[in-house]
Structures are given as structure tokens and as C-alpha cells.
Image 1 (tube, helix red, strand yellow):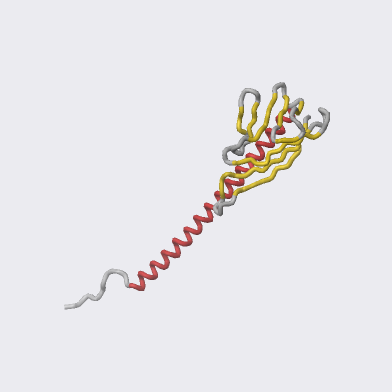
Image 2 (cartoon, rainbow, N blue to C red):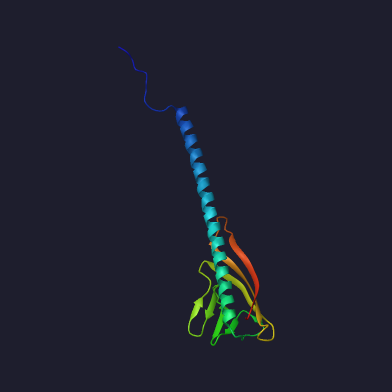
Length: 161
């Protein structure tokens, strides 16, 4: 009678090699996932800041070109334009630019960004030379993987037509 010495299963060496290769694969995949997540968060933060900056400046430019006069003082965190009715830009306590058109108050930036250091400086004496220097810092509320936030400092001048 023949004796069968073939056993089914793994040897200890085969099992250790399998576990080592599996561990290496899991490490590479988790590193790849982490890098992808970091890139996604960075892209979102940059996109939010870019989009809100463009919208805020476009809205201010549009309202300045429609305005007939700048009616606020020389410098401060409030801008008041007259376009038949008064349009007032202010910064609320939550880091949002508010636009009050006399009947409604609307938030200008999205909930994904925060505005700090908003200042308006009235420059010029006459209607043809009236302009406003606008300064603010816009920060993304979306944090990157390392806890950093996308931040931009905006400093521009807008004038009446």
C-alpha cells in the first residue's frame, strides 16, 4: 500500500511570503488613497477661493458701473453705492459679505469661504474720479489634508464709469 505524503495547505514560509506581499499591497493602496484625498481637498479649497473671488469682484464691478455715487465715508468696512436706491456692502460676524439693496440682504460669498479684513477706501473727489480701493482676505473653509487652508489677499481699485 502506498502512503500519500502530500498534505493540503500552506507551509509557514508560504504563509509569511503571502502576508508580506499582502501588507505591501495594502500599504501602497492606502498611500495612493491618501494622496488622492489630499489632492481632492486641495483642489476644492483652491476652486472655492477662486470662484468666490471672481464673483465678489464681478459683483462689485457691476454695481460700481451701475452706481451714480459713492455715499459712504472715506474709509471703513462698509461700502454704500447709490443706484437710484442705496446698495450697502458689509461684513457680518461670520465672515460673509452681505449686500443690502434696501429690501433684501443677500450673502455674496458662498458658505465654503470666509472673508476677513474687508475695507473700502473712497478715493477721488468728483463723480468722474470717484473710485474705491477694496481690500480683503478670502480663506477656504475646506481644509487640506494637513489642516492648511487656501488663502488669498485681494487688493484692487474699482471706479465709477
